Figure 1: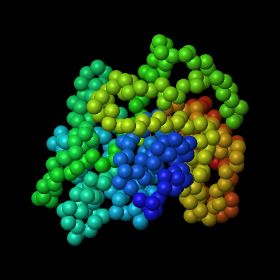
Figure 2: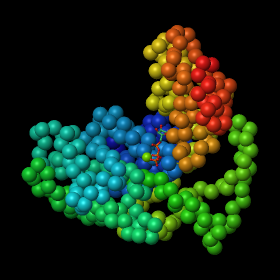
Figure 3: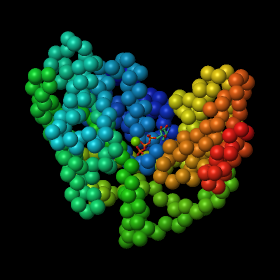
Figure 4: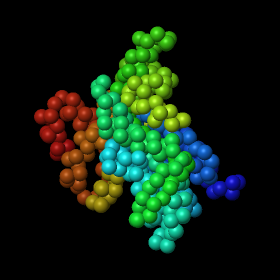
Length: 362
Ligand SMILES: Nc1ncnc2c1ncn2[C@@H]1O[C@H](COP(=O)(O)OP(=O)(O)OP(=O)(O)O)[C@@H](O)[C@H]1O
Ligand SMILES: [Mg+2]
């Protein structure tokens, strides 16, 4: 199919505008997507990444990409669902997934679509399963029925070629072998358990801490541990993902933890970034909102210190800086957020809630 309009690089370039610091994952998903779109076998993909590292953002970016490319419309049957939804027993055997793909295909193809066309639309589907780490089959050593049901439901679709399915009074047989599955999850304790294995297990060279100097001058020691370098299927089995299920994901990608520089870019660059959105708000009052380089660095530095929330920390930090100004936007002119303002907001929080309220009039 030499005339297929899209190459992996095109997908990559576009998604990269909204997803920062996850080039490997974007590359992988771009290739999988193009393979799938041209009808080539595409590897199911599992994305593992800490909370707030961009898994859902990446899935959304792929959805937007397809939605914005009219020429791909006939291939663009894409659904995103939380893994939890699959735990509803009455919808077992993947019917929740097929039902969504079916509804989408119907909508895309219009009222005159033949059942055959709809079936083809479903069989070409792309399914994003978010929060897949929430469907463990074992939790704290005990079986977790909801997790087992959900994994089985997905497995039914991933391993069977022909799945029966009913909708609108029709009965269909869906060949689900070409549906592309992309799952994502934070797998919280996985990080610790693999780190433990890597630092005190037998199969490792001990890690030496490295000294990291942040852009604001803070010095700290960190272990150069990247989950992806050590992760084995076995770790995921132990986490509670059944071998039959997890081995259907041929491609496992570990997202990066976002560094300060990435966080600064996330704060300003994407189309819907926190800063751009905030600028829009102030524009309504005739105010041109600006931010100094120092302020940006300080916000990113503060967000990077918050553990376990990734880029979400940016919002919390920024709220502290901007709250009072949003309440009383003085009309007209330029409003510049500077480093001093950010540092004061951070200090108020770090020093306790009482001071945080005093900051208002500045
Ligand atoms: N790599 C990234 N590039 C751009 N924005 C990001 C990135 N990571 C996180 N964000 C921002 O942070 C917010 C949270 O990110 P997202 O929802 O993608 O996290 P997640 O990895 O799905 O986390 P969780 O495991 O908690 O669901 C998003 O609103 C997005 O704006
Ligand atoms: Mg998410």
